Length: 389
Image (cartoon, rainbow, N blue to C red; front, side, top):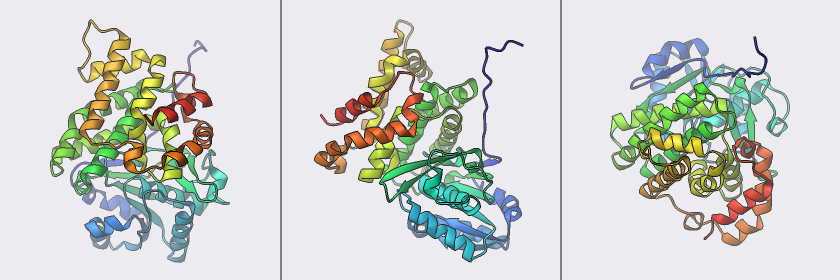
């Protein structure tokens, strides 16, 4: 056997149950996890009745439950510490994360720190070595893909930085992808999370670490998102569009879980940490500036995506097709009414005062190094500057 080829590893959640009524189909698996569960979610899920839908199913199986619904859109280490305390005080056996990426990320972090020693900040950039208690996740937005990944992002309140924790042990034991839970997402959330999924898929496909299996999931996700995200945005109760977007978010999550994200995510996290811009929205704000800057390192990859969504013809060069694809991404952002940093309310002076810190934090995350174009800290600074026109 020749030794000049590198094998690719591909990992996914242990079990995925998807489609309408997926929660009801998951009863037996949840019962096998234990007798008492900590539900990690937010107050919106309680108000919308999604927690009640879940607890009714748990009650039908005589599974005791403890509710922790104090997670917000930017989960912090202090929130995680409170969740750990609740889990231990109530002698829970397993966890369920219900919500968007924040409750799911928080569920992973709580589980990790129940079985791993030290503080959560000790694990920034390190592998989570010990197995977590069993945990299931139920995404209520179609975007983060956290239900399919070995990553979690938590804010370190002491240093004002988003910590990326990783490891195969952060993959859920069970991902319940039931599109009914996404029906209540308002248009702005649908747009931001949908573009988060699109970012995952595009970055997975254009990453240095892309591989054939991740490519297939990434391309499928891109095609679904361009077709169904506008429908889900315009017609929130369209179950078909919601189901397709749930699948797309899952596919994109599986893709980047194996090939990693690139410059957009690297630059997005510091914006979220310092200016409290929701993750999906900060990604969306960066798409045009980042892709325009790095496209010359991957014309062929961006061009192929243009062909996959049928906007490139045979007479186009790779460069022309790649630029056409980025133009199509921008058109989608306009359709979805994505604001600029200024429109969102970010203070320009404070932003420029923090550019060097944000650039350093972005590079430290490692994500920009996955970009096919060589990226240095000065490049990141230029892109941050380009966000203000």
